Length: 342
Ligand SMILES: [Zn+2]
Image (cartoon, rainbow, N blue to C red):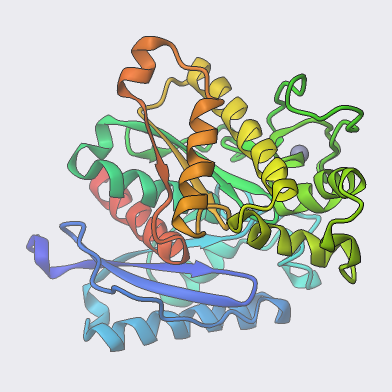
């Protein structure tokens, strides 16, 4: 048997534009403290994208001076939609639009190319796992958490006793498409928000950049006809600018972010009743913001999460840390725990 310090795992975070890589030793220490990004080339199809990941793998070993023989497993995370086993959806997606991706076994393809076991998670689940281990450390396998990560959509994941809950078909933890109650959240005359998934009134229809663009901003701009954002070149452009206004205390922007915080709080209230987690994490651009705004947002989420007294006494509310590195690090943690589980 190799000694504990003789082997490592590698985490590879695959994104729409870039890959990032990290190395984790057998004791759970990250050997890389910064981003090492390279082009992901996913638009060029699976063969080229897998080769790009192999390059990232070789690059991070070279940078850390780790011999390839010391790598026991690799963690891979990608944007969705893919199955729990890392098979890309038959319908493709924004990131995987090249026809070669349909039904492609991304995990298996990388495993073959590297000749090493590869453990797969989607990017939201990987980030959730990293947040969980960062907060709980040695107690991680005794604790549970939920992470809501606000981006173009609403991602995240559910972690129970240190493991990502994946479900029977790999679609557990799809927090964005959980229905939340809308009474008291929507403004007067505000239409029921719609989501790309076909639902109305789910968490992502409010708590996402797409939700701002499609649902929240058109309503609020009509209520604030003199607002500068009415003059933006497009609603998509305006939606991206709302956070900056929020950080500077703009009234209309704060209404929008308050609705997002309410949506996440209501989602967390549902989580409190069916899983009663130890921790509630919020991640994404909205908390990768100026400290005062970030704290205001997190407090609003907490205020809108209805907990029983016993739950409130133990529950922790905090942000997903180091979001740019969370994918690679969470992927590596999943690879490490797969070895410990064997
Ligand atoms: Zn949805």
